Image 1 (cartoon, rainbow, N blue to C red):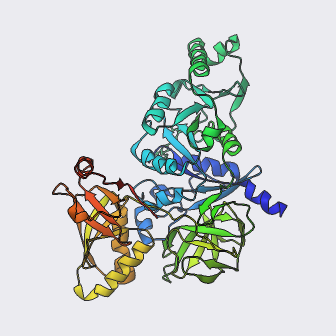
Image 2 (tube, rainbow, N blue to C red):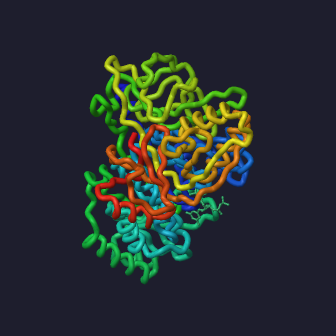
Image 3 (cartoon, protein in one colour):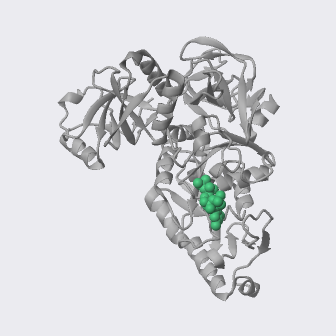
Length: 530
Ligand code: G4P
């Protein structure tokens, strides 16, 4: 029993969120190098087809040289067992990216020091705030020209609405970058450029601000700036408050440079010290503690077609309590069926391995004979319960999809429904309408191509796609409103989703405001409640 609790308390399950190009892949690689999970950089994402990608399951991924699916990377470092949930970012941004955040206990936000807070970071941050999980910030690329660090903090606070606490402070940037000052240890971690990919340990120098040796090390001007900055921070900035960190109200901020491996190790150490062990989760039976002896997990992602020879699917489950053992019998709560978890995999950097044991906090991939849906619960508990479901996130791209060959209606409907059930796309119908023509909504445009490709290869159906100019969608929260009676701009469309929930499609944010102003009591939501 003690071992079991120990194992769970070793777990740290987190996602890295960022805008494309901020350095998420580079940072992930450096973290994996520390954990010894990979031997060389460049293996996490076979960018430009250079090396094998972690997930190249689908033909389309190979063609594009990108990863469509997010994966989970586990590594051990010191006493911790760390699970990094990869959140796809480039063109492969999809609803899965959001859903992955539902399985994380904390998040690391990577920000490009020259660019500050960017669009995709904002979107992902919003989902993290919704969950109230701790968020750690790594301000990257300090070896390049960067914005003023005070301005960066101000931007994080203003744009994202979270307080900041710099754990270290940069000394110069770009060619003038001298390192960072650790506010707690009161020492300087000196930066030495060691070529493009530095992996060596940076030197730490005990530093009393004001000492003359710092003039030599940093130059008189940077030394003076550092002294002034630290004085300002100590006097005027937010205090470190663990309670606020835990609830995602204050983010510890670290400056560094992932590419040159500068500041990564101290970041990892602090992150492991401050980030939470697996968190309890809300369920129909109240909060379930991770150390509760019964195994339980929820499905947060479904991946189709891992093996092209079979039309099987892998359901990714986040273990929320207890211990998983391969071959165990569990109850699939939503169907009421008992199932044996005989086939299970775990992602270890570049390989997929069979996993025999796993603990609360871990992610496992389960063979799915087609019974799982996103948000489902499996458990061994005698009194079954269901975890709170996963909300539906607002798609941003819409198209009308219809089958070209009307004789293939059955395959079309089946394909569309199955792909939607996996959560790869959302489908909307005219109010009270059928499946002749449907509106498909996706978070990332690549999903349209994935849809067309899969309908063709798996269901033998060719479709016609007509892009639509809607860009926003809102779920109508009022149960008692008939959408037909709403006063809306002429370009706003009324639809329903597959759960029968009523929605509105808008061509601009302006129209949303218009709808709210002209319909008293109308409550619109950016996420569809589970
Ligand atoms: P992403 O996953 O967030 O999209 O970013 P990724 O790590 O792929 O990094 C984007 C680019 O930024 C890469 O350059 C990477 O080498 C560079 N980069 C990441 N961290 C740092 C850093 O700390 N300092 C500097 N100077 N550059 C950094 P690229 O030229 O686009 O790709 P590559 O040819 O180097 O692979």
